[in-house]
Image (cartoon, rainbow, N blue to C red; front, side, top):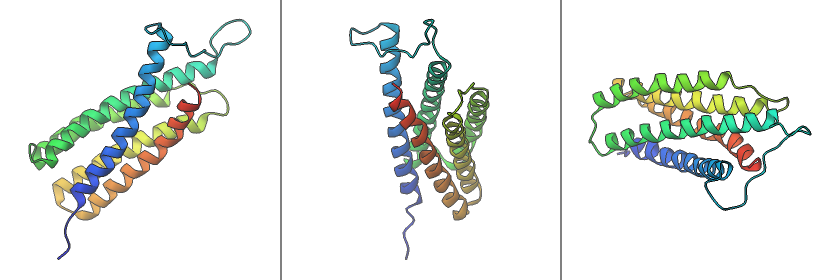
Length: 180
């Protein structure tokens, strides 16, 4: 008799993704407080051109950080609901409704990211963020299908998409860490 570890796999992958988002968001919070002068630590210098204006790259980095912060918050809230499902606090029907409520928010975030102005040579960073959000949303869609149908293939697809989202996240997370 084969045991079903799909819920455990979902929670394990979710935990890794949330922790990764948490690390990036901690950095974002730290960076934001430094720039706004809320700390006495050394300020992280912003990239400026010769006239003293903030460069397109810095605007892109700051905008991306804002999107990452929104993404982290959205993912964290959904993962809390998923945790309630895992502990049987939410049933399948409730989780389906919750997922339907969250999917448009991921789509909205993806649309917002598509309008992000990107300096030459950094298109892959923007694309990695968009693909990460898209894969995460696809994961939740497959998970909803699994809850609706009980089809284990949908659950496997959900896990694969979530894993892809995490891989895409590594690209822009590394960029943000390098450009602090």
